[in-house]
Length: 372
Image 1 (tube, rainbow, N blue to C red):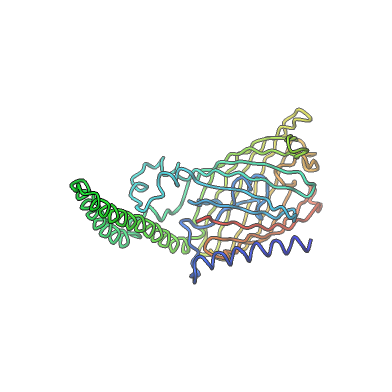
Image 2: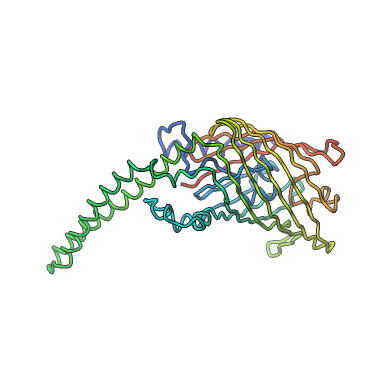
């Protein structure tokens, strides 16, 4: 246990050191284009996060989650990305995103994630999930007034570079001497490099502006709709994957902010599990409520989650219990935004049976790292 604690501390301190080394002195404003670093939906499905009623949100980035629920030396891992945003709209200018239809702006929030976790009984669970943010109270990138000053400066510098590129390309076409052509090519490559650096700088400016907006609106309201598949398995040999059960889940997360410090979040989830050993389906319906208080850098929560099922034995069957929840579960904990790209989550989960008799208590910690 002590060795695992040291291992967790090394990861946390190493992450802090790496970010500080990359960024130098940083401000207290966490830099991200959205209001929070929500847990990966794949982790949300298998209960690896500190809060079972997860905060909805939109990352607009690549993200890695580590979870330390079982306190073993092999941390649980989840990967998360938004491919449509990254491929189509993550540009130095926001014009394409602003001119996109409401449907395409919605589709840009499409989120893909996959993760695994090992529990105390050494059963591994595998999940993948896809999620859409169907409602956002505020989207900083759609407010031109926030970016007007930097966009005007960007366009002026962009015009100068484009003019230089046009001159160099025209000169290259007209020049016949090899030595002079080589010289022109060198100048052309230098101007193209300036163009690339300008794009990077403008992306950074956009992110900083969105970050300042996000700090003021960290508890803005969101609605997320998600679907995913879940599996339970053991690797008996290197060549065999022994699946013990599989299923799918559909869930809805909705949050509502009050003032500048309170965020309330609700969860509705339906899970259908196929037990291949028994040849039957097990249905679960889950509802929960989370109360969160704090700021974009520190916040604390308390939550309650209730689950009903057509087969109560699922709560005692480790090979099938993919939802990691009991009849009644309460959790207490919080999030600490360590740096602009790293967040530490922690909590204590308490399980009860349907008669409100205490069953178990589990400490949970995790690290989320944005990959910019």
